[in-house]
Every structure is written in structure tokens, then in C-alpha cells.
Amino acid sequence: MEERARAFHDGAVVVDGHNHMMMELAKRRNRGDRAVFSNYYAPLIRKAGVNVITAVVGGDNTCLTNDSDLMLWGSLWVFDMLWEEAKESGDTISICLSGADIDTALSESKISIILTIEGGRPLEGKANLETLVGLRTFYTLGLRGVQLVDNGRNRIGDGKGESRTKGGLTNFGISVVEEMNRLGMFVDVAHLTEPGFWDVIETSKDPIIDSHSNCQAVCDHPRNLTDEQIKAIAKGGGVIGLSCHTAMVNSEKDEPTVEDLVPHIDHIAELVGIEHVGLGPDHTEFEIECNIWTPAPGWLEGVFYGIRDTYFIENLNSIDGFPLFTEALVKRGYSDEDIKKVLGENWLRVYRQVIR
Image: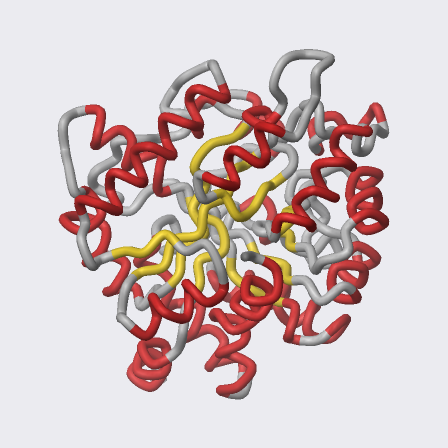
């Protein structure tokens, strides 16, 4: 079973729908390392059988902006680092700006990188002058997706940490979604409050995604999606990337395994179809032993995600665990066609349709 699953995995197109590799890559570059991607990451990514990575390159938290508390400057810093990496890493990677770019990179056996941010603070500009200049400028720099909020509040809308206020998208947030549709960028509703989620559903004309959330019906966690939300994403042709955070996978176990993630896949498949399931593990590092970046203890880990013995499900705390997804799906009895959809084809469908 394991050998068959690995052979199948290596022959499929595998997409990581939400990855924080830039947290660690930035630390390496700060200490003087260069061509980090080709020297360190590419061998690990290829060993994991991953072809496409949706990489977070800025957002609403200092850990996303190379420790800068200036979200615009810090995000630009991280963007610059990744573009320098692309130059230094030669034919190893391709920063993809369209679905056609992804297909070209796949045909050339390059690792495709799609740029997104986790939270829209870098797009805000001056207070009370909320123009779309920031969004369009980041688009020109290669940004092709925006997760509108993180856990807190920004000028686009409210994250799940602000759920008690029952806030949704602001007027600026609605304008951002409309402009993203016009430009050709995917809208990511992860972390968004439920009122904000429905504002996006009402506003967006393109398929939307949730890059790293699971099912409330399987695990009752505030970051997970209700069945009605899952149905709405599917109705628009979107995809839900499943997260490997332990608290979002199983509410009864401190140390869940990949087998505990499969019921979330089952649930979405039964509710709306396997065409709307992807993988968005939310990994923060590539080499476990490197341990350059580790989450600081505090509100995020201790309250919102709950006290757990482990932060990620067993053996899936870095990208090298990706083949375990395939093995679990084979064991569950999913068809080859459906496994390929979960591993990457569903993500590719949306990327080809939306980004340009």
C-alpha cells in the first residue's frame, strides 16, 4: 500500500495551497545565506513530491514581514527577497503570474510559486485615504492572491479574533474584492468572520478559496467552516484547503494524525463534491532540525488554537509529510481520479480560471 501510494503521489501534480516558507527563508537570508531555495528547499520539495506552492509573502503579522512592525515595508522586503531568490536559484523555481505560467513551469519541471499575503494591512495606505494603489502596486510586483484578514481587524474587515463585534467587510474591503476580480487575483476568506465571509460571497464574481480551514461539523473550532459556508464556496466553483493545525483537526485528541484529517475530506466530498477539496497545511518551516523560526507562545497558540501537545498533526509539521496525504486517501479507498483532484487538480482549476 505504501509503495503504491508513493508511486502514485510522485506521478501526480501536488499543490501546497498555503505555505509560510518565507518566515524561515527570510531568516536564512538575514544571516547571509543566498540561493536558499535551490540549495536548501528545492531538494526537500522534490522529495515531498510537491510541484506548486502558494507562498505567503507578507500580511498582518510581524512574523510574516521579516519581523518588521511596518506591514507595507516589511511585505515589500519579503517580496524583494523572493524575487532575488528567483534570480539566484536559476531554473529551479518560477514565480507564476497566470495559469499559463503554472502550466509552463510544470512542463519545464520547475517548482511553481504563487504569491499571496495573509492579511491586507500592506494594501491600506494612509488612514482615511483608502485607495486601491497598494493593491495594484503589489499586483504589479507579482501578488496574485490576498487573504483579506488575519485573526484581527484591518481596514478591509474583521478576522475571527473579532467575532464578538459581528463585523464584516468595510466599504474599502468590498472595493478590494471588486478590484481583485478585475485584475485577476484570487480572494481568500480564511480567518474572515462569518459576516465578512458572506460579504465576499455577495461581492465576488470569481471563485473564492479558503486556503487553510477545516469543517466545523467534524471539529467544532471557530476557525473552521460551517456547512453553509462550504456550500457557498462550492457553488461558486471554489476550493477549501485543509489545515494541519491540531486544534482544527480533532477536538478530542492532543496529537491527531493524518487519518483524523481524512474525515474532513469525506465531509466536504459528501456535502458538495470532491472537486472542492485541496490541501493547505499552513507549514511554517522546511527543515525541522533547522528550527530557525518557531512560533512564540501567547494568545495565538494558547487561546485561539487551544493548548495542545503539538502544533501540527503527527508527521505533518513540514512539507516532507505530503506523501502521507496520498497514503491516507489510498487507504480510505478514494479513486485515483479523486486523489489527483485533492492533491492538486482542484487548486489548478481555480488558479487557471482566476489568476492572470
